[in-house]
Length: 344
Image (cartoon, rainbow, N blue to C red; front, side, top):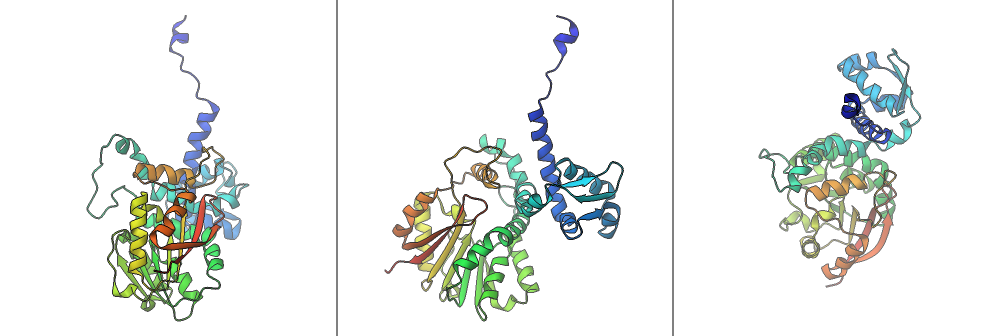
């Protein structure tokens, strides 16, 4: 064997290259969403990168590098040496799904980078006002807001079309946009938002203020699973909870929390609970968007994600009747449970 044969490194496979480069494109999509580049392309089909960077006081080289990565994924097209980018073959699909990219990279990437620490029972240090898992909760709230607008809100509006309500409480209210939508559905209705994340509540205050609804909404910084009953909850007749019901689990805690909600909101008539559910099928690169990332991140946090049947097993025991189960559409593992309280 020659020296060259002995030291020659194995070639990096095409599959490995594609996985690595796809990960880079995901970060570029997230950056383009936050900087408004996706919005600009959606409106105009093409964008001059120099003008875009100048108009938005952005670094031209970084904007150009983001565009190069987007072009690698056919999100945009760009001729060599040109500052003009145009809508690529994958633009519409990627743009529509961009909040999931943003949740993964901007909201959750620090948590995912710490998986070796959590798997080894090493707890990384955090600041007092930081999410204990390193998530950017403002970014998570923005991603959830945009995903709700594009994928979940229509299901919620349809489910509540025939439901009268005067006061709604949204558990895990995030950016407040769901409350804004619900209050705009019913003239004179009032709202309550509860969230454990201060950055999300800051955003909710901003959003409701811009919407002219600040006087009709109250916000509380609480852990939904342990919050006390409040006088402000007494006349709530509609309860909503999107993408945080899994925090009620494991099962005994879920039963206890659902009972507590029944007591804390004594006049509630409808409870719309929407969440990701565990699926039995193994993941592939063609699996539905979001679910694999959601499951991996929550495994890192030690959170259990129940299946639909497991949810059904706690409803009656905790004082609720499930009157409907509605698929939200995207992701396919996300469902809406429409609950009503059982007679005591």
